Length: 383
Image 1: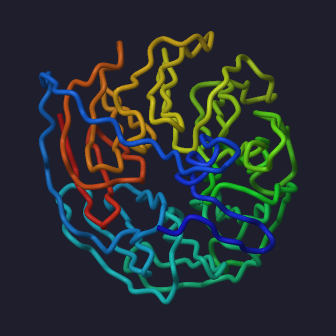
Image 2: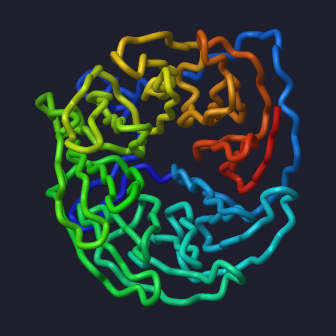
Image 3: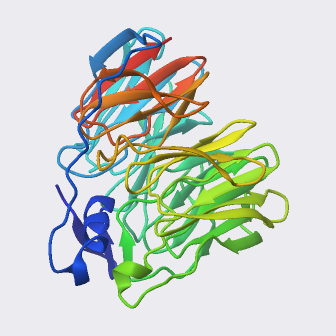
């Protein structure tokens, strides 16, 4: 598994090795923890497999979260060997398949008639949503690890050098750019830009969250989610690798080795904060914010106060994904190959299914859970 890469003067660490290193005494020993064995459970719900198929070759030996994209009809998957596939989300039937010349490092984004992916070569490429035909590609001066976003005829792309660029969905030409200074040592990944209305929310490896105007890129507000601490560069890593979420008037953002914070969407004012370290993902409902931390503990925070409602520690060191919201349950996958359904009320495990090792966060649409494994299998479940 590729763990450390230097690109554009930035040293990139996977979360796997960073977590192991920061648990070592002065970085001298490899104290990578052993995944916790699973305790027996008494299933309370029985997830039904709707369909499962091998869509592509997946991520190979790399730690990448190639989360699929979905629209009204199709689900789109990408693999590091350059394969882009569109499947009917109800049946799994293949709609089209395109073999690109790229080393794809991001999950796809779909919208405005195109599907876009980013690559190791610094290329952002757009394919026609209807048939997978290449429309344009644009070379950017930086590796693209964060999933792009599409909205209002803009493709928003974040590169590892701290630049955010808006490209025209029609031509790929740059419309505006915005930059923040990034540290020299960052996690090899990145949170995706998040579009809401006329704004885009972007998290950076320096621990800062910025709200930008979607049309022109003007900064509307900026808020540090964490402040670097420690004497060593690896101790000072505070990347926002978990994609922020928006629920009602609140923004939730979290960093590696820092905090989770709730902020007011309109102003960026901090409503509450709690120390935590994460690089995976979050989900929220009207009562709680659910998060998987760097130790693979799953947390539930009260959405109004930030107080901890419960914590599930039975999946420690299993490299769990971010959570998905499935009715009365949240669902996480793990690197050992399991999906776990946790009861929202107290976090106990209510069901479990084996699908294969997974880094990409599962997601739910119209009551169906979709999970994309590291070896390229895509599965759909219902309760």
